[in-house]
Amino acid sequence: MELQPILLRAHHGLCICFFQGRGYSPAFTAHMAAVIRRLEQNPPVQLTDQTDCICACCPNNHGNVCESAAKVAAYDRAVLDLCGLKPGDRLPYRAFHQRVQQAVLAAGLRQQVCGDCQWTSLCRG
Ligand code: SF4
Ligand code: SF4
Image (cartoon, rainbow, N blue to C red; front, side, top):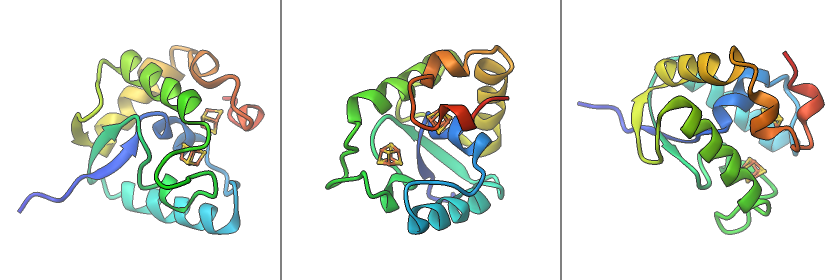
């Protein structure tokens, strides 16, 4: 039986790479850490430019709409474009992670994707 994919905003593929246990609230941070532990098991993910499993515990999520919806959707689209993917695509998490690593981080394009995010100073590397 195929596993139900985990819904994942494309730009969260970047945030996960830099996660240091900080976030919008203690509940958000604990939930994000739990999601990352699940992703480390390499489940299938379904990519989106809408709210996802990480947004589910975010105080900025109002009725399944991020209060910075336009800004973060642009991050999602940038990651998807660079990785040659589109919303709705499904693939194993590790395969997505590798594309993010190669097409965005190794290419030196992280700042171009989300350089105006409030956390950007934590996400250098
Ligand atoms: S700068 Fe913001 S959007 Fe970009 S990886 Fe860091 S937390 Fe995520
Ligand atoms: S700030 Fe927006 S995109 Fe980021 S986790 Fe919260 S609701 Fe989701």
